[in-house]
Structure formats: structure tokens, C-alpha cells
Image (cartoon, rainbow, N blue to C red):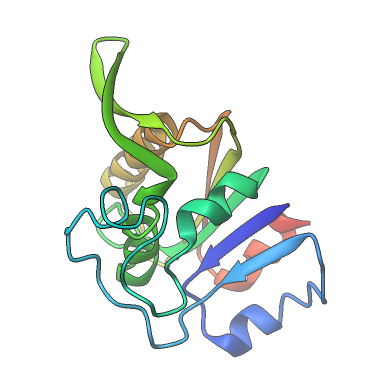
Length: 167
């Protein structure tokens, strides 16, 4: 299964004309997502599930079932848009609260015996070389933290060009 997290407006994403696909789950902004409150409830109170019940509480479990995670985000200062960042924050239940050292770095342990590939499609008409460097480092770090099998980063001036990269 592939999961697409995006910050495009409904009309922009609909123009991709991906059609109904039972093998794809699309996460978009329904206007109801709450910010992660850092309570660690997804680790302690209700392991694997966020305590905030807004439709985004099962992001960790969803990631445990995907083979391919695709992120479509406006590049903002070399990072994700606030919505995409929030979805990723709310996905922390994909991991355990315990730590492990990998290549001299401290990371959370895996909750699920599962891996997925990560592809990030950044768009924006004025992405600078410094923002590209920062975003590539960010995606690489996310890839390590989420135990992905690899990552790819793409840049587009026009978000409608992303469709070509998805097919």
C-alpha cells in the first residue's frame, strides 16, 4: 500500500486524476488536525494510538502498513509545510519510546517489524540552493528515524508537475 501525505488544495490534488485506488491512502488537510501536544500518550496511555481523536490518531499504524510513503509539500525554509510537519509529528507512535544507538546516533526503537520507501516532492517557485541542502538533510534524517528503505527528494516549480513524478 502507498500513503500520500500532501498539503495541496483539493482542486490541485484532484487535477492529478489518480482515480480511486484501493492500494493508496491519501492524507490531506480536512481542517480538523490538532497539533501534537507532546503528552507521550501514544507511547504510554494508548500505545500506538494518539490520544487526540481528530481523524489523524492512527498515523503510526497506517505507516506500519505502507510500502511507500509519498510526501508532497511546499518547501518552506528547507522544510515541510506546517500541515505535513504536523502529520509527521502525529506519526511518532510508529516508533517506541525506547532508544537504540545506530552509527553513533540515538534513535527510537521500531514498534513494527516493517519498512517502507520514502519519496518527498517539494514544490515552490523560489526554492534556494540552501533550502535544497537543508531539505535533503531533513529527508535523510527522517528516513533514518523512520527506518525507511531509502529516500528520494524531488523539486518542482509548479505543483502540477508532481503528477509526472508520481506515475
